[in-house]
Length: 79
Image 1 (cartoon, rainbow, N blue to C red):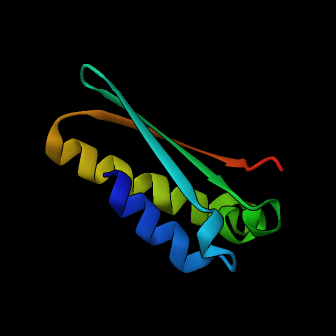
Image 2 (image 1 turned 60 degrees about the horizontal axis):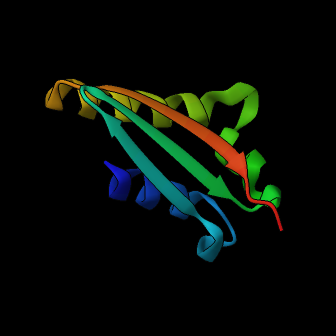
């Protein structure tokens, strides 16, 4: 799942090297935290959050297949 999200996000941003995806699992729950360059946040979030919502939908579809609950959060990398 981590590799899938990293692949999708890295195709959307200008600074591909700054993309960092961290996946944590707790039983049947998976939390994915995506860190990226603050300048690329708009590209990943999209107008009215449509792109971010689509990425979350893809992750949830994969999670359903694996029988886990998935959440995806996006955050700007500091420094």
